[in-house]
Length: 292
Length: 292
Image (tube, rainbow over all chains, first blue to last red; front, side, top):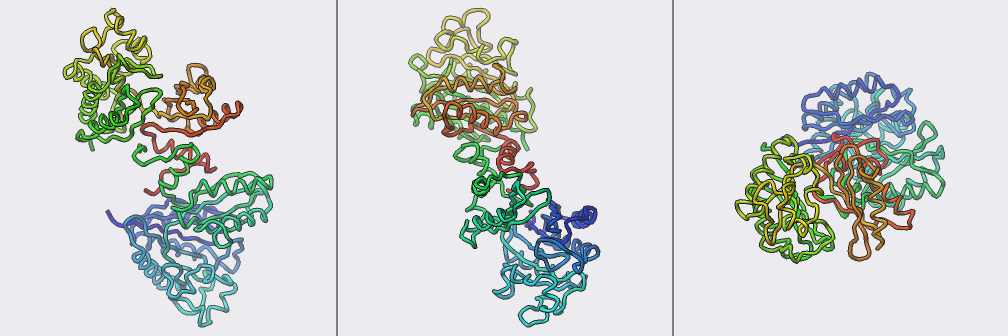
């Protein structure tokens, strides 16, 4: 069996459904690739595509997707709540079972090269693909966003890893990375009070004293909802039920209920069985007890 | 791939751990068979083995297991809360993906023949293997239990389907059946009040007005616990979370909490994902979002 990789391009378009569908369909039509999931957020004005396939497959799918994004998205007029610096904003490659991080880094290198050769879009490498320690962190790479980078891109410390030290006029630059698998899990709260979502994000995330292995941000959503948007980086340490229950309790103390949750992209079977076992009061659900 | 069957022999021994392990190990050593699960209940004085394998495999495993049970179990001195008429009490065969009920019925026929030829134990066919409508129901077949059947077995309506019209002196008789897949799911309550478990069983089970497709009984357990023991027969209609939450609410009105639940044998992946989705507030968890 060929080694499989996940690739999760984020584009700066979350409102025009037909454009998003068209861009996704182009990626999905690539040989040896499956489009697992598409999630769009109008207030973020951003969409996340989850692709799974061979190394060759996901690189080609990401490049086709980028080509379509460049045609349709102009960052000079783009507005949205989520930080961004490119029409295709980030392209992480993730090794799945049997594939290594080194191989994922090579896919990131090939993808960045392709972005430059085909579309003249410069790239920055981040996380495991970073070429220097200060670029491992995506938020450092994206600092100042598209508007701030227009000037900063020529500074010695801010020049792209691939391409000339100038942004693509309408498509900006892309952060291309390699990283471990993570679970993207969002909890939507039935309130318009974004401060509550932000306070809860602070409570759950590692960098402000919460759970090791969780990154979180609070956002406003349409329809009087707010969102605690999370990346569960340490999938084995943090069960989804524990995060959900913690957020439920924090929100309840402000009289707010969970309106719904979202699983973006993939989640490992064991993580889902662990949560099912917790709520059904089972010690565990070993895989041997599961029929397909 | 060969067709697979589940086989779930129940034996009348739930207290002597070494005997139970020895009997299970014999079945597990059969070629083309896996012992998925063993659950013993001391107050029922009964154990349930879940085997999965080829048709030939599970029939041979059930026969080996029966041979060991006959050696170790004597119904003349057996006491337990659960109704029983044999050292091996029931042997149901269940078709899994790709196998048919007709094939499972043939396995039941071969198993009953083997029980008679090897050990001189008579058998009754039940559920889909029943030879007459009034024997479809296991409780009708087992009416009077071992003690009552000693005399009744010679009556025209109560004679075994395979073997002579007399019980094996120490091992009684076996109910051999073929049936659809079901989920065996038990909810233990933190009380010694068996009446509460019985009332809740009445509330959830189909025959007294509860959920279509659920069979339930209330039992006492050691350590001041009681159990609502269920067979979820209509696996698609009744999600496990719904049963669990109904029982939680019924018990809570008597001030009693769930102490733990038990999943006996197999459960389908989709049923487990459905419960995980419910509790994690997800619309659904499609299989495409699950990595293995």
